[in-house]
Length: 109
Length: 111
Image (tube, rainbow over all chains, first blue to last red):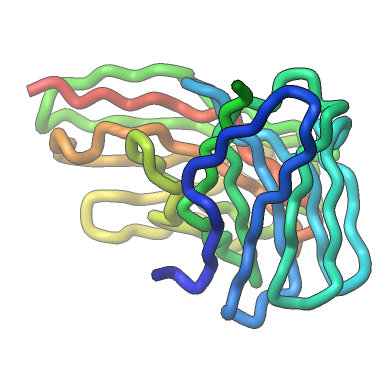
């Protein structure tokens, strides 16, 4: 559905634990992005990657890390350094138009 | 980096009326001007876009107009329907250099 897949859909994490969110696309897009969305808020850019093995920080990169070892994959790790990680996370890829995954709702318990 | 603003932040219209949302941006190099719609609990999806060599584009009830000199573009929805209720985001871009979205406009269409 849409060529970009995020997993899992819901994720619960204990405080102090790192967790990795998966994002895979089969659209052959070079560019991939991670956004955070809090309730009733907009999309804030965490990290983006224009090409394999290269990525750039967005507006709110602190407490997050990414890798881009393959064109198809752009996983996001939410580290224990992220003070308030509970949010809805959206991955996107683009050529020009952005295609979004279904999102991962992360809750810290 | 790109500074993107949207006005208004919330908009309520009666069913059948028109709605207009404006997006202003700072990067004069921007050349792609899309609008995305996000329904509650769902992912954003592209509804219309325009490139810098075009001033206006229309697709049924929705249209986008661009004023590149003034660095703003607008989304126009005519004959609004309840299913148009959603949050709308603009995302002016320069060949995918930095996909920054506007803060969003929440549109409510009242029956």
